[in-house]
Image 1: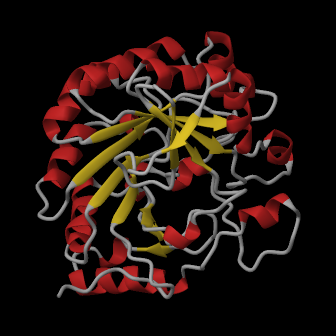
Image 2 (image 1 turned 135 degrees about the vertical axis):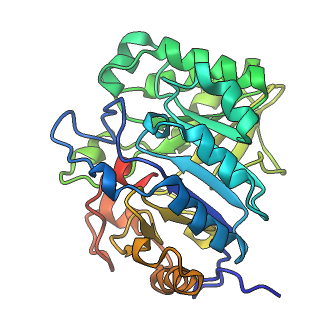
Image 3 (image 1 turned 180 degrees about the vertical axis):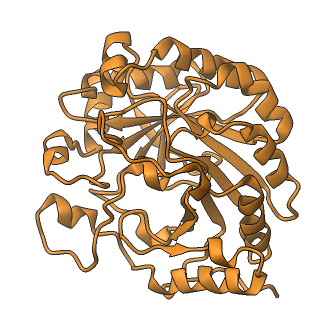
Length: 335
């Protein structure tokens, strides 16, 4: 039997998140500063061929699911070609994309034809002025056009990623839930995470996701837990309002971490394996691409140092942590 990617805690890793760029056409307040970001030179970014080689090797060790992220992955030219290359690798069953949706509508059909399986669209507000404020300049109408295009070409289940921020967009919880009532959409509320922040400002905007249930109760909506997972690879706990066409999910890495079931590794745009989103440990694979044995050994080495938990809750309470948190911004990691 083929050796699997298993860490010290018995967690089997069959899912790789691949950041194809650290650049983005937006500057979302929870992800990037308005100015001053230092981007990787183009020569430091993994080529499509290098990414293909990494995935080809990992597929031999049980990786079946991929997600392309950024930055904003669609600022990378010709991304459809990479999707097609990855689709041809034996063993790869699922290729998903996380995008802010600004550039996706006109390319939806090309991605579907290349072999894209599913799409997640980041959408933190349905209101034009607020969306522009959160993203520092984005046009929510273009995102909604991309949502319709994804539905038209059949890239389902379509998930909407909503980072909840107290005092910024928490008054739209009901509006997002209504989307799941009316359409077969899967709205995922995500807790604000302390990734790459050099200040404590995120704490003032942090909101535990129990608030979503409070809003359902206030509206008189009966909520049922989904026994069957919404198709995907993520850590969402999924629910449905009684009678709804779609569902909603809660991703709460701070208040109720899901580390015990973590099945994912991350490959950054500049070629680093990150065994954990939050900690600073990284292993650069670029120098071993082309040597299948050494490449596999590096991934196993990364798994050997993967901790049991990311301890974000300790950051919220100002408690001492066992490892060093990353200084990279979310856009530099790939989420």
